[in-house]
Image 1 (tube, helix red, strand yellow):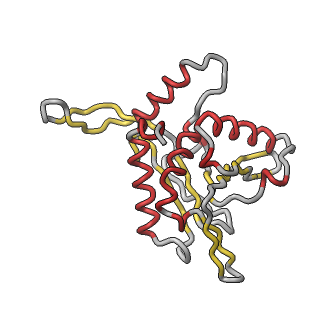
Image 2 (cartoon, one colour):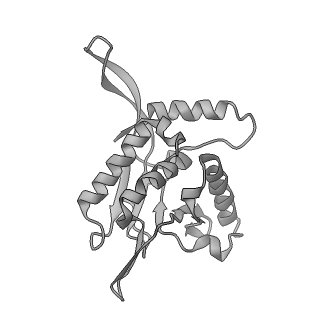
Image 3 (tube, one colour):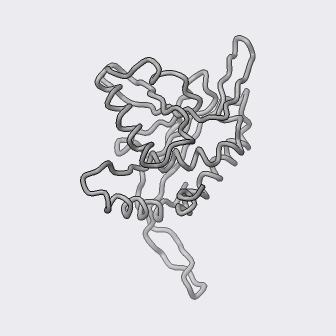
Length: 203
């Protein structure tokens, strides 16, 4: 469970200055966080050829974006996502989703992913069990952001009940390649970044 209150505030502030231009959703910010953390967890950015018994780890992040289309689920890919800023990622997500839904995505845009994000947006629930996009070894599922009361420490050392925007982040892994401890540690590292969103803006 991640407190995305400050992240949502930052996102709204960034969007407020854009006018009619492309606006940020949660996904580009999440991709930035994932790309910053993945070098510490290379076992997650990998593919497993189970017939040959070979695991291939990747330095570059080729992020698959699970997209529902009239022809069924497709996974367009943002290649080298680690080299893209949040605005470029937002543009890529929209462009690839539109191409996939229109049946115009190129074969190179639908192959080569090393890790996949899957989200149902407002249709989603508060928790999911995403299905791995084989031969990848992990898939990440951000869930719906909901507002709930939480306890927060006030400046006087007491505790207040305040409204917070919370989001569960789900992950599924192939345990032949990824230990549960590593998967949980990865999610906690991503959580720390998302709960301190100014860190997303630095190198």
